[in-house]
Image (tube, rainbow, N blue to C red; front, side, top):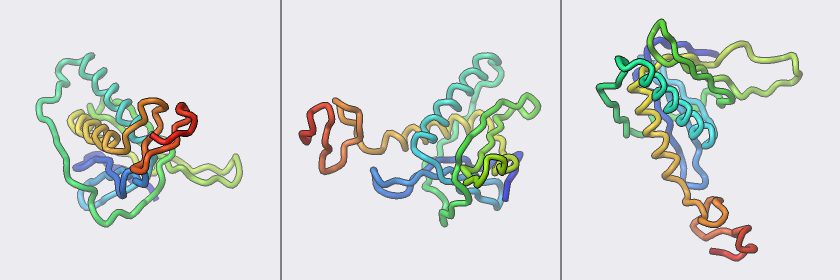
Length: 172
């Protein structure tokens, strides 16, 4: 199944679970249709960074595309959270025709042979610059809400501490 939306009313990343055991989801709402796709923490982080870079480049090249109305979406993920597919690849592009950012989400997919591949994207949708900036802001706060990194090795510290490789395995 695949989806295609020209207008999106909600576009967010969110988590389910405790730090260290969180699952990350991307939700896209257009009218009565809600897509919920799973992805990795690193994908959310990289996606938000690339989206932030793209919005800044667009605004730098054309001063008329400044965002005047900020969007803040602090609401939780919509229930029920049903994973429609697992995101493998994400494509981001600026569409001059619609003056919106086109996002394509591709299924991670399990291929049995090299010749057998999925045709096209699982979801294609367009967001405006304000929605992109709101997504970046929310995503970065979600990423930073996880476990703190160890100051020595940068690995996440569990509530019980962790075996730091730089400290020869001593708990900190």
